[in-house]
Image (cartoon, rainbow, N blue to C red):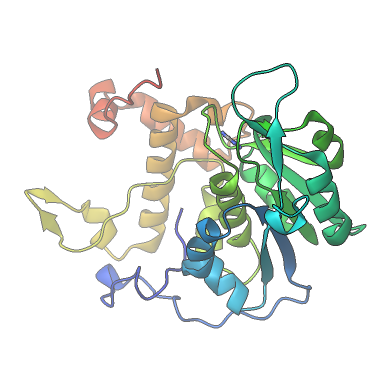
Length: 287
Ligand code: ADE
């Protein structure tokens, strides 16, 4: 996926005459900022990533307001306790329900969506990100320890997983959600990037090149330096299809191909299998 980069992410050069919309001023969208409250025991884990790049810019542009709260302020007693042992015995501590109830009593509004990052939740994806980008107020509760008291789940609107692996807390999933959502807010990235993204929506990204034109004997495909915009567009779509077929064929299931995509797929099928293998190396298994 292409996106408008911050100055530190972009080269000052402009290879192949690619247009640079990095500093273009987007129209201010006629909608209130998306508000996000994050509840965490480790606020510092979020500060850096949220201040940088597109998330940082989305906030300075007024597209989103993010508040990170230390959950411990709602902790119990003199020691501000937030967790306790698990009934029935077992290792690890569990987040107490009163702590979360107290925090939500302050933060929750009628238009809030309360999200719990949890490996057992629905798998977060681009469609969910689009849905959440339309909401007015998100509250993300980041659990630590062994998890949350089961009674907390009734306070939650949405449990979301970022994949089949177990992280040590909800902060990294929260950052994944926020980053993915913020870049979808109108005005967060340049409109050219959005147009590029929508033309290959649901496909893996096509290969990209920058200078030098030749690196260690590997040259940039000639079509990309030809200046023929329509040919470049077609090449990119075909390569996005090639990569998707090779690496994530399930993404194409249920996708209604345009006439152009069907034609490009037929071309890909007609190519020698070896040519496709040469482009796509083997993908390591997840086991
Ligand atoms: N917390 C721990 N692991 C997680 C995962 N994979 N997704 C969301 N939240 C988590």
